[in-house]
Image (cartoon, rainbow, N blue to C red; front, side, top):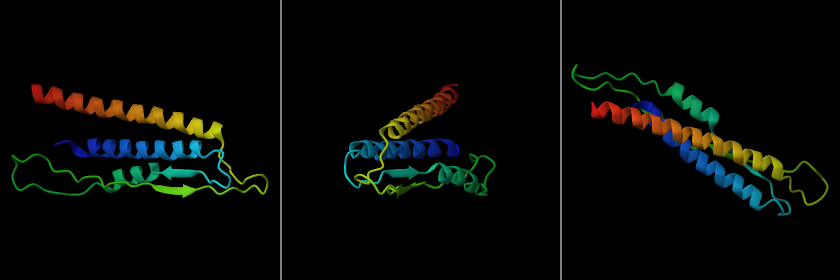
Length: 129
């Protein structure tokens, strides 16, 4: 009934929250000697899950709702960026870059929530008629 859209948007919101936590951890450890910033990557996996989710299912009765395959859950992958510098405390956290990533992630989170709200609004309008 809802299709893959709501599932994918829900998964994307969860991943954005996780990314926010990873970025916040990087910012909190910006002065920690030897700290390597973490990155949570999931966009390509999320994109792939959409293209892989086209499962061919059939219904046994013409009165049944259309059947869609559900997009698989995307976990994302965390990687570390070790310092390539041989000077200082080997901490390569750039506060400017982390703040930019934080802002970008927040904007994308808000855009995703707007898409999800629009989807639910459309469903609500259909159910009311």
